[in-house]
Length: 191
Image (cartoon, rainbow, N blue to C red; front, side, top):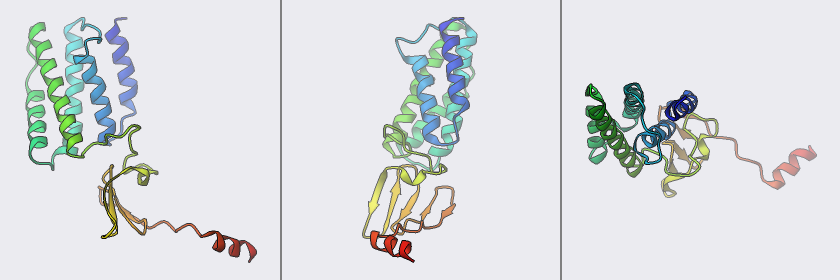
């Protein structure tokens, strides 16, 4: 079994767990980019290896598109460049196909950088939970407006001071019941 086969098997196990969250997709894309661009990555043995990595990068571009499609400026340009390059057919000759793969990997890497710069992806380590996760409100604050009574979390959730929140998909989460003070807790126990 070649080194690339081992790496591909590990990637398939990891990407099988990827959800629709942009951060998880970005993590999987970064790993694929590493397989292509890293000097320490195994040498691609065959046309099939190049083709498989090309398909993986195309899939990442397709998955990242919805997270970046509403953006403008450099992010929109990076997304367009990645989509255009991923839509091109892979050249038949191995050397040209390999060059095409490296160009696509570099373009997807630029897209990820633009998404992080625009705030479309989490740059925290460990990664913030997605908005759909049960602990989505534990994400880091990206924008805080105490005078207005709200904050935008890293995962795109809009968190209100009353602890109610609005997820990016439009789902409204009711305010959590505030924790009782020590005195209120004592009174409740004594009743």
